[in-house]
Length: 431
Image (cartoon, helix red, strand yellow):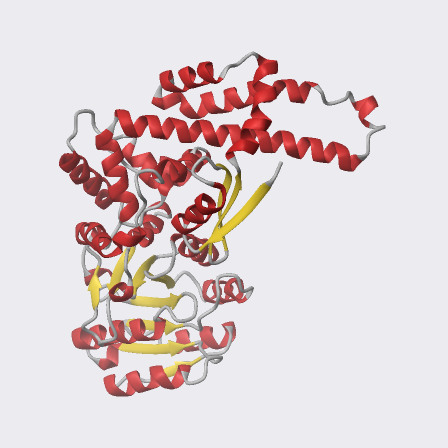
């Protein structure tokens, strides 16, 4: 069995590499995200045919029968049917595995190789059945297919796109379906109602996130708004950034312009002392050092802020230009015992924002602000759910060269079956 690996920066690029090398009849074995791109394992069509024919003959299942079964599958039971079909087709192979006593005489390498091949065969058949099912749906339900394309083009994940479009109201037109889709997404995007949440209530807020997401600039924007509302005497600034060259100086310059002193802390003890001294301030903003989501320092930073008491509310800055996979990883790392909310930064640099909205919806984050430039304090706005959803679908026009074609969508959607059990999807409000 000659399995080949193809890697591209996007699913589309990897799929084109597969087609160029193995032709249009290539069989996709797996499709997964790797660092910096997408990896596809594929098999030439003739290799798959040579592998599947003996198994089908032993089972008494003809190609025509398999095709007929695929055509009559109900949409809601396709995944279960794919698993059942794959299990039935691989049963004769599984039956050839020796009993435990006999297996002891076989080398562990040989037995392991046999089991891997059985699992590979089952995976191939499941993927192929799922792809056929999606091709069938595309033909029978063109409105759902059109709405699905719109959602994928806007940058939303394949699993969320599938989950939502499967619930599309019966009889909806393409225009009505997209309108319904936007209302569902906006309903699930949690935002603050006004700046009263921060500017009027006050409190201690720590801006956290990876390096380069714009924490210091966003801190300065919030600080300027607080000064404009309450005056410099009601605000205090703290920085924990003792690592980055010029990190403290950058915030100190902003503080000097605003007439606000900047306090520098190194550890939990320093932070406790500083917060105790500043307890008379209406608002305290903490600018933290940027740490990669994969760095152990993230845990230490969360512990330091949490040890200062419940008074510190953490706001996670998310870079809208990052991929959905990266953003999801960032949220999981920085969540800790819980976040007060998040701020989307660099919207002015993002070609699509559906990926960022997807993560905010799945992780049930409360979106406070969006930042779309470097100007202080102008380029900071209270998040508006309907505006952000509309913007996501408008931006897709700029990414037309990278959008999936009709023939590619079944391949993309075939690997979402297991994701349908994701708790974050089941909690999406559709009604």
